[in-house]
Amino acid sequence: AALVARAPYRLTPPKMKELSEQLKELSNKGFIRPSSSPWGAPVLFVKKKDGSFQMCIDYRELNKLTVKNHYPLPKIDNLSDQL
Image (cartoon, rainbow, N blue to C red; front, top):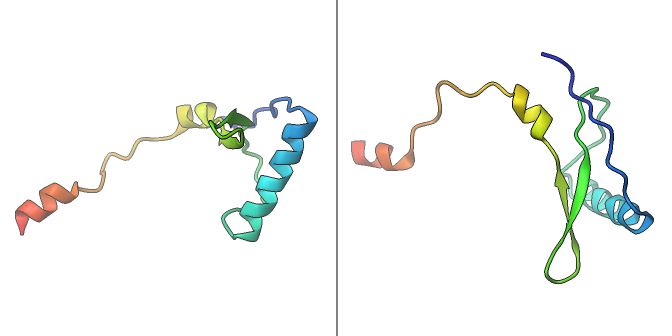
């Protein structure tokens, strides 16, 4: 598969500050870690009703290359019916 490494979207200085703060918080909580992967997806922000920003990652290009699981996990309803 072709490498997906999209250029980052331009962010205003306040959004760059917000990005830095959110990444630091996610790293401190152990949700993310530094990566040297050549694969990448751009980040953007969506303003929430309370005025804060929700960080979103644009995985559209990566999703185009994702192979669908031909053997999905069974649905819990089907499993409970078998019991």
